[in-house]
Image (cartoon, rainbow, N blue to C red; front, side, top):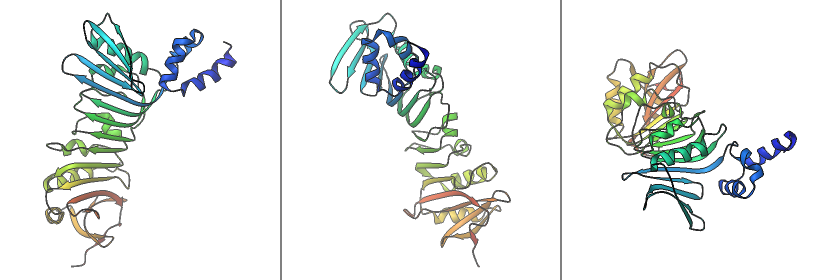
Length: 290
């Protein structure tokens, strides 16, 4: 294939579905080498590590199971047709899964719309940086390297991880305890804490974020409070760095960050038990008249 023909073919192939790519790879020997080097644009990648040395991987409409079923095998299931194919492998399940995943995803320029990790295997951290739009994480110690901030992340607990620190929007699902020290270091545009935070935890978060002049205006944290947000106002108002204010006719507590920004704490308009902490331009909130 000439260079002139190669580039357009590569550009078109890159946006073919995973299924079409695999069909072409199997039936057109002439493009196999090119196909193996072209990045994927995938809708879904889902990884689950099972307790008994079994790894399940879903890529778009295909499910791959790596485990010991009368010998070590890889089972491929077309989820659209339920067609199943299996083959014996020479490697242990985790090694075979690692080889397959790195072969498939470690291609510069790979984009994945939705990624779900449940106890993600350690080897995913060996993947080259990829682009992920939406990420759901459950009980994992390993993360995909990314080359740009993830748009939306849902995570089951707060952990020290660059993916969370740099993501645009993070939701922390219900968990036992929120690590406010870690959360205060995140650079997200919005953080949603679905579990409850105490007045002390909200105050600690505010105190830490108020020391950061790099937080952009409009960035917010929203969390459920263990009681009415009025208790947060009362708790914060006793702090020397906070003052009672009004924001859009709502009670608010304001903490100065620097000459151009301030931190405003107020009750959500949706639920009185939901507290919002927002970085605003200096002077957005108005001091309450005694």
